[in-house]
Amino acid sequence: MYPEASGVREMKAGVELPKYPELERLELVYPGPQALLGVPIHWTEKRDGSQLRIALVEGELLISTRHQDEASKKFQEYFKSTKQAQGVEELLRETNGGATPPAAVFNEELVVFGELLVKGKSPARFELHEEHEFVLFDLWSQHQGQFLNYTAAYQQAYHFGLPFVECWSLTKLLTLEDLFKERDTMLALAKERGREGVVLKAFRDNKALYAKEKVDIPRIERVQLDDGRVFLP
Image 1 (cartoon, helix red, strand yellow):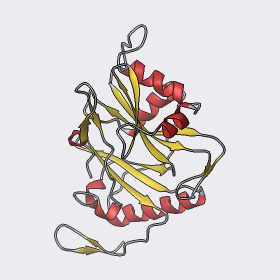
Image 2 (cartoon, rainbow, N blue to C red; image 1 turned 90 degrees about the horizontal axis):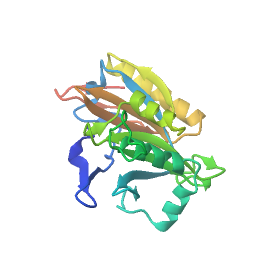
Image 3 (tube, one colour; image 1 turned 90 degrees about the vertical axis):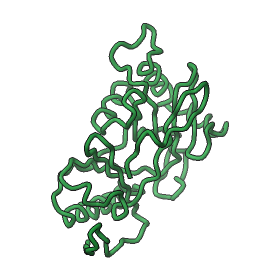
């Protein structure tokens, strides 16, 4: 699936904010898994938490969940109690031109997407957290109308001392066999490290091409290609 600006939703004062796309597993990615061949792929860890979108609207932080334009007071309190809350606000103010003095370099009008890891056992029971934490996994540029690539997003987070999901592998694969073999390797690593799964992030023709794989989802043995052929992973 291509995460594009078509997923934006109008929020306050005419500001349009993106909604994070529903990611398909590798076999079902549009227009087909072969679209991931021949381009660099970042294989990043999938954390087991609650997705938050953090934006700066009319000078105030807007904290949203996947299903709520404004998160519940409980989730807002959880986020604000994390060590990362101040850094996230600073990043947003800097990149939205709201810094004092105004930011001159990073004027990307960023929107932050991340995983809120609440103290205790995680929702799908893959992780155990000792404290509330917020880990970034994507940055949307309102200026560019798309997600930043992994390196650019990581750099932005790094400059503000914010954790970003780990990249376990960077590949450029030429066959479906190698693609699915790397998928299986990454899932084995996710299981070993106690993670929910892995997210694939690639760009083709300047458009983001994402997919996700989870440890607890059964493997699909056959893939139907566009021309009717069947590929056996």
